[in-house]
Length: 527
Image 1: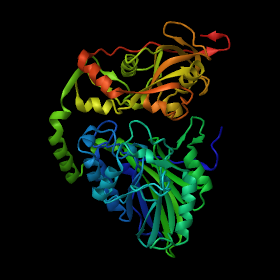
Image 2: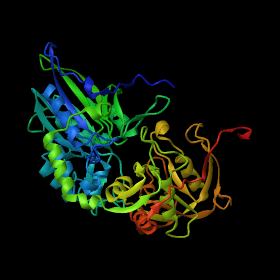
Image 3: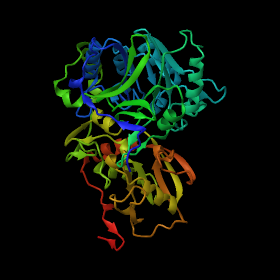
Image 4: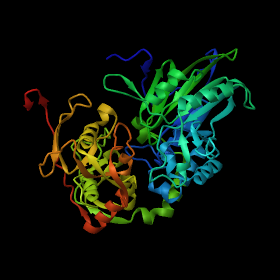
């Protein structure tokens, strides 16, 4: 299938290729620069530039392009143990140093209380934007959010409308009190605030340009088809949105969706994206150009911002003894994600086996299912310090036990036969089931055969005791556990279970799972 003309994919540039505005042009340019899905990537690694280099790169961009506004795309604070130890302060320092004016609210922001979110805004000098998150009781915008931000830069008034991706915010690992809010349709919320702004109801008057700062995902499927229902619907239906930032799925994207320029800058401080607004001498908006900047090809040569470097060193010195505390040992390198592609093998890894084993040990279950994308890179051979453990075992989701029909079990296994390259999603980790899968087949037709580990059949109409992590239990992506019966939320969570397992056994052997077999299948059978 050819890509629709409504969607044009751009090209990601390395940082060294960025050029400043040319004063000879008969226009001026205002840049909106967005860091999305930062995930508290404070320290430099092969997956992140680190705060000191990210700050230096953005300051260099702003020096070349003085009319630049910095925003964040949500999921700013979660997944780094140093950030968690200091209640997010290192991330707030980073955002304040960049003079961030606004941030979208990401789904991971819901791990924190409304009071925490308000404190970060006050201390960081920015506002969280969420036009479509409301109080269930009153219908008002959540008290920790603003529907939009509006400011003036180089003579033009810019409005940013913030939109939160659809999310069930009463999950067990979200902050207490978050269940008093609901997320409404983002397109309808955007339409309301577009009209509000066009009517000149803001004290600054009517904006010259309206940009959507969203935590909506967008990606391109292998056949070139764009996928991201929320973002696509927004660009198609919300007349008046003249540009949009996407996020959530960690992609580098610069494109046009139904004529609307869209940009997304990867994740974890690996780069950033820009929407560049070109303005004619008569103050008319000429166009808006989306772009992406990848810092990683030049990462080793990038300078560090001296102030940010000192700040980070201070934080590290204050928590170093705890971060370096050894909890166990890896007998071999335990690789969960490919160091180049970040992909996880559909056949599973030593870590996915270990996680699903500790899940199975909490009761008498026929199967355990875990979304493997919620585990980081893995462990190097040798001592496992607390910092590395927390960076790898990212989430503390509690477990959900249920009775699941054979048909629902098989369907969810089918959904989980994905690859990062093909579907942009990590595969499902499975224990208790023997699976033959052909991932060369189209998505949705990959499960060839499945039986329980004792080789007994999985009957579609029968119900079986199954345990899943709390993330999966919420039926994200295309998973569906809504038909599960007798659901019980256990006190146990994956992080604590794995931590106790490593403390108990002291060594991790690196044993690989063998229950998922990749095959080639045709009409004649298995080959």
